[in-house]
Length: 519
Image (tube, rainbow, N blue to C red; front, side, top):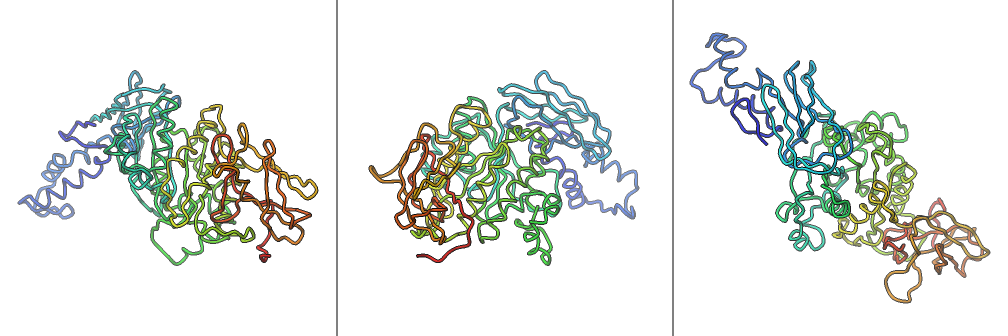
């Protein structure tokens, strides 16, 4: 990127801070001492001349772009895309990209914005912004742009993922780029963030979000277009920190998330809305195809918070969609990772744990239009909340995106329980998203694992199960009159039931009972 007008080369993100830096340097190093308030040492006219020379951005209002617009960026194809920044109030601003020329004027607060017409995938292009000075953003590609957010499992870089060295060595994808938002907790919404788009290479990919990278890599390969990934994530954070304050205040069910903060002033990464303010608001308006989300561990710390998540996830999705204002739900599809298996394996199917309830809450989020879920009940690690296999996670998120956002004729996600019918002493479970058939993966000849049934006493017993077409028939000799069924409803269940696309059946239960005593 280049900048002209004051003889310096700088990025758009640096322009705002330079004038004050120059003034401080002048005060520190000049032999002439003066006071801007009393003007006792230097005539006022001289002061103005010196400031005009040393601080041209203050006098002339250098045009700036928002921090997300940098060299190597990717703009969303086939969609009208806003471009915005700041300049002196009333400054005339011209934006040029290829044959497109857009003219506007900074408002009284110095803000300006233009909207680019739809562009096909391609590039590289140069984006030129002209006012009293000129900014040129180089190597701009047009393609697919996705926002990736969440906590540590989204933030986890490629260098910490499975087969890191081999993956880094093979990461030669110059048309795949990532913008990683700097961590920032703010009490009020801010307008800008500072970072830079990076081109994917064996050198740079080590720091990319693993989940986002493997998601984007599959899209890039299968769609054959440039892909841009905006990674805005922070480990150990709760969903309420990523949702705007006003929508949460309007929902009385969310009162518990505000209670811990009544006597704790100041910004915090888990204070409601603080990460929305600092890490999402600055991105709002940047043209994207949709969002991917890997979060929930923080909110699975108790049964109550895990239950509350079934209200929080749809609220976050609707909040972000309204902020971006790109159209209907189909214009901002949203896909998330259902929490994987974790902790010790327990054979008793009766306990109700917060991780199982969190997965249930996540699945209930699918009632929200244009959403999908990557089932990962088979790729977790019992002793590590940060499983290293992010390749499968990214692949399954991309599976949902390819099927739902790009209308590819593939199964979008793992099988979901559609209906349960009682057939004498047996229970028949039917599924959506089966594909060609249900299959047992793993040890040859093994039966279907993970099912349990309960009768009127509300005590669950492990059950045998067999595949029957696109359904499963479940039975236990201990339960002659079954009224409820569970599948993989625990922290770290043993599972081996998959669809033809190799994606596991999502855990479920048909009851909502309080935990019963074990038999």
